[in-house]
Image 1 (cartoon, rainbow, N blue to C red):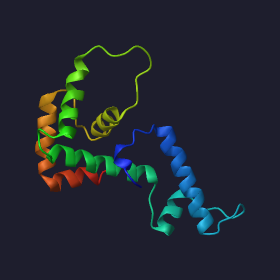
Image 2: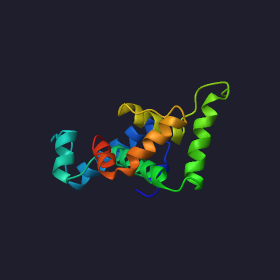
Image 3: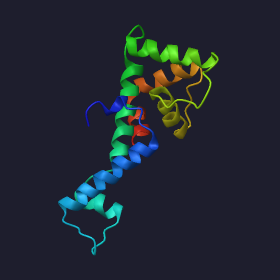
Image 4: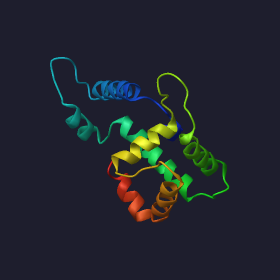
Length: 140
């Protein structure tokens, strides 16, 4: 799935994507209405996984690349800017769903935080240890 590491799709959209994917897999296996197969068995039979898990894994890989990249690079610089802008007054209305908020949510699920620059430095040190980074990636 091309460039899925940069998607900031809401959970509802990813759920719809998974539904369409499962429908296509059932069509490929020629499962019609009277016969039933569970989603888990469908994924096992096709040796596949939900597309939302692929998107989350690619987002995690992209974060590792950004953290291991040069400090003066544009991706790392924008990450620093996003962290520094957390202390600024936000806009009025419903909170936006963007890539940074999804990355923070992914990190919170692994008991990691990205609330200040020190948290970023801590994550950067973890990302340089590729074995532990892959271990956290396997939790998806």
